Image (cartoon, rainbow, N blue to C red; front, side, top):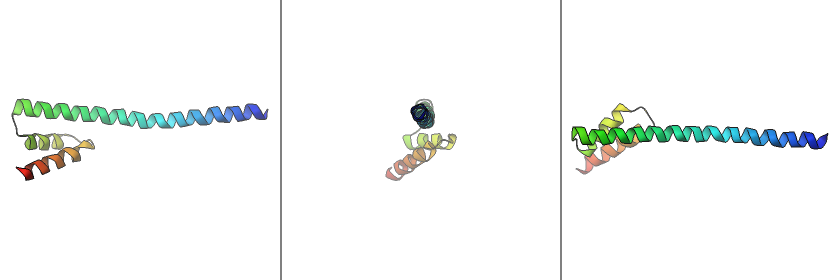
Amino acid sequence: MLKILGGLMIILSTSAMGYLYSFGYKERVRQLRELQFCINSLSSEILYSSNPLWVALNNVSKNNSSPFKELFGKMSYYLKEKS
């Protein structure tokens, strides 16, 4: 009886750990999709608007609400300062 209870505890605990790790991977996939969308937006901004890179980065940072908004905003700021 004790062996069965121990085996069940091991199975349940490892299943719970796997379930918790899966939330982290789901979040990572969501972030990668958002980054891909931002990069596609940047590409179209450069190709179709013919804007300089710092203007295109600034427009992408304004149009997105993802955590990458700050990244693109800072890159735009640093490029503007250098030019």
